[in-house]
Length: 346
Image 1 (cartoon, rainbow, N blue to C red):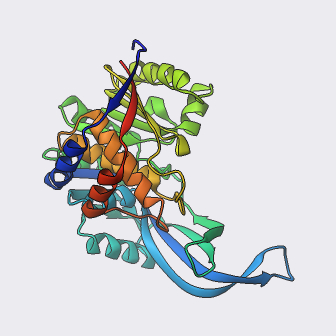
Image 2 (tube, helix red, strand yellow):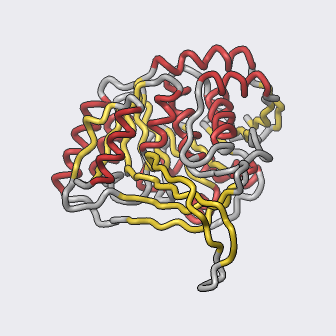
Image 3 (cartoon, rainbow, N blue to C red):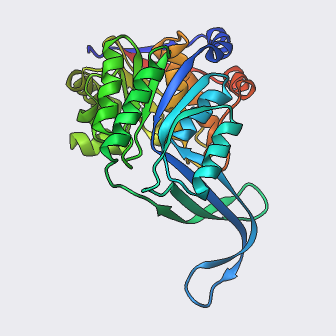
C-alpha cells in the first residue's frame, strides 16, 4: 500500500440510511459460548481477614458471553443470528440457552456435551449507588481440552449447512476449543465459495489464512508480529504484512482508546475512538466491533462506513455494565451527534 495522508469524512446521511439495512442480513456466529455471572454489592469497609473490601450484597444477574455476545449484538440491530457452539448438560447451560432464546437467536447449532461444563465467568463488582462501578475479582470456570472429534465434526457440518444461505459467517475465538481445525476449514470453504467470513481472533493469526476478514487487538497483534504498533506508520506496515500473509481481504486492529485501524488492498484507515471519556465497562466492546462491522459489510456498506458504525456502536456499549448491545435508535442518535472524520492512506 502506498502511504498518502488524506482526511476523509464519511457521509452522515449514508450512515443513517444504512441502519435499517442491518435488519436484512443473516449471520452465522460460531464460537465458544460462556455464561457471564455478576454479583454486585456496596463496599462498606475493609475486611479484617485480608486487605480487600467487604461488599454488602445488592443484586446478581447473568448474561450470555463470548460468541453469544456478537450474536446478541447482531440481533439487537435487527439482524438474524444463528448460533453454533458447545455447552455442557448442566443448569448453567439451561440459563444460557434461555438467554439466547429470549433474544430471538437460532440455537439449533448449540450442541450439549455432557463431558464438559458450561464455561462460566463470575465477576464481583462494587458499586456506590451511582454509575461508578469497580470490578473486584473475576473467577473463570474453564475447560480448554480439545473437543471430541465427533463434536468438532458436528460443528463443522452445522456451519456448512447454516452458512450456505447466510450473508456472512463470524468465527468468535475465545480459546476454549470451538474454533478448531474442522470449523476453520469449513469457514475457509465458505469463504472460497464467495461468503464473507470474518474471524475475531485472539492471536493465532496464521490459523486463519484464507478467511475474508481478520480482527485482532493491538496487544495480540504485537505478540504475534513481535513488534510495537504504537503509531499509524507501524500499523500500516503490519496490516499490509497481515493482508499478504493471511490472504485476507480486510485486516482490523483494535487499539483501545486510540480507536482502530482497518486495511484492505486499497486503503489503510485509522478510526479514532468514538468515546474516550464515558467508559464504564469495556467488557464485550470487541465483540460489538466485529459484530457490527460484519453486519454492516453484509448489508452492503463500504469498509469505511462499516468501521464507523462499528466504532460508534462500541462507544455506546462501553457506557453500560457487562456484555451490552446497542439498539438502532441509539446508533442513529450516535451517528447524528458524531463528528465522523477519518485519516486515510491509499
